[in-house]
Image 1 (cartoon, rainbow, N blue to C red):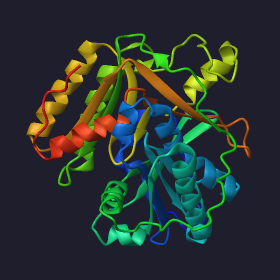
Image 2: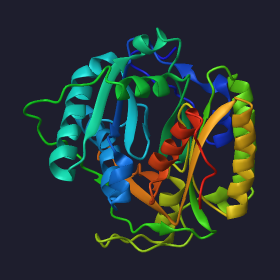
Image 3: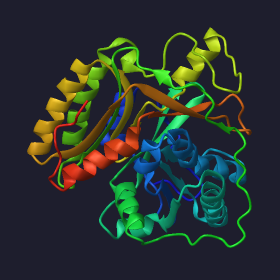
Length: 347
């Protein structure tokens, strides 16, 4: 078990290894779990505000890391929100950062950011768990992966009004140093940018889900660069005039979180329509067997929000989502599937 002052040491550099349930270590009961999400994010995205939604989603990671003085804590970016784990002595930093980003989202971005905080102990009493593994996407970027169903359960509770953090009356501005969303969106090179969420049913064994996830990944890994959504050539920067050379860009691409495990698969990929159809057929069959639920969304471009931690300027973290709604739209489809009213996904 990971104690109050540590997180898992070994980082796995092959993504398929983090599908293995045995590599995950449980967090201590007293660790804190924080979760944020933009309320009505799909409506904001439909009105063209996808960059604001993504920026609000990533803001708590930047604010907390800058306040904490280190980014060496487990977190995951989810498009319209984020989740993180912090040892118990981080409760003041966590509460403050959550209040600051909610206030910032409201006043500066005109978005309602829901914020919640609870302990791993409270999650375990529900029969779920929070276990963490580390995935080294590159030499300079390591991302936390979460298993055990605990984050999913916590998010559902927070959306239903439990464990909410009350907004502070006089919230100061969050320190978002290092956070930017200034790259031009990246067009698909192969046909479509796919946002895919696949979650196991409560009764399915982790081993069975891992086998299914590997089947899905095998379809995408067969494509060049494992269906990476960022181009291999240096793209245009956005308004900031940021320029990188070929070596710098290959490091940016390598350090991105286009594949994640967050109580399920969370992927942003550049695919052919045939690849998507093949994977969708696999997932429709698995859902019919009651093994999983899934949501996917196709769009023309990918979007990147960057975080360069000030304490480790060589560590570039690049959060990816689909520009046309991405994970938020995929989650919407997944919710429809959970209620049995999903229809074949339109292109």
